[in-house]
Length: 167
Image 1 (cartoon, rainbow, N blue to C red):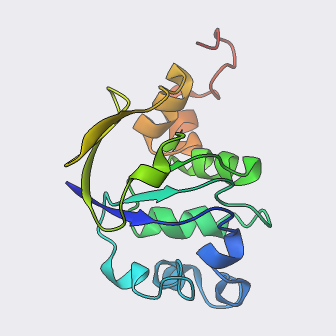
Image 2 (image 1 turned 30 degrees about the vertical axis):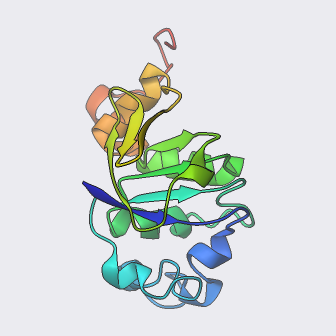
């Protein structure tokens, strides 16, 4: 079981990791100390590997700070489920192997509740219901399975869709 960390809409990368905590301002080793340091100061201390972020629209908007999703990966966020994502955040998180799902029903999920994410079945199960997720394409699942786009490349010697049909 994972804990749900609930956020609203328009959570920008500065809320995820404020610029003054960027790795080039502090250090790469300290990045896991800063996710949501101002928006939810308890997050970095209390998040457990596998916990889920559930949010409204436009999660990850703002600048293209690659270190924002990296900080979430470092603390072990299991997946992010949002009504929509900023495209650059979506791509940065995908490159890092963070599972992302878009879903219209995120308002129904409660902060702090326990949930189980079944990535293979594309569903979230809580005490009050089972919620269907849109299954990602196979190549996205393969990136997740290898832990990142770089991991995928190291294993297969190519990027998804290169020299093979995209599924």
